[in-house]
Image 1: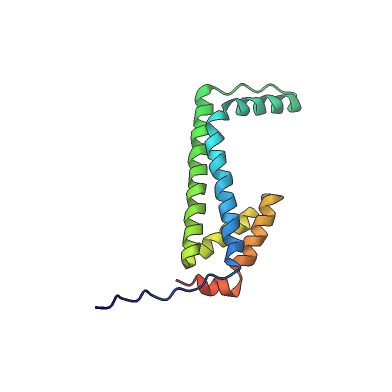
Image 2: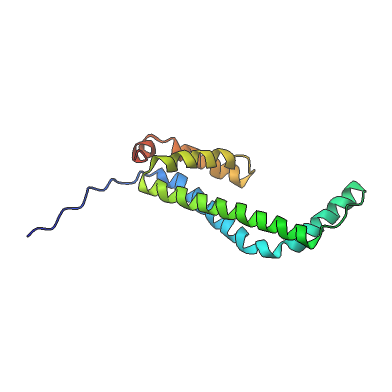
Length: 139
């Protein structure tokens, strides 16, 4: 009785790390941001006060309910970003084509986050448009 042979594995291209590493960095950064979010309520009020002093006009302080709403909306948006980064990286490592497309979109949007996001976005786009990565992510 012989054991079935596993399907042949395709070697991951070298430039795939150009895409997966910035995704992992973004994932870690946003996860830390998500963990510190509950402590941001006072920061929001401080920012409003600083804007008030810069503009010279009085701005009504934010109510606790409004701060809570802002923090919950931020929580859900940041959670969605973390999930998108995680599943995009996972799909790309598995060679799925939608992971490559999603990483291109994330890379283009990262270009706007000067200076670190710009560097990470450039690396992601270089890796995503590499011929070997395109061939690997064709499932």
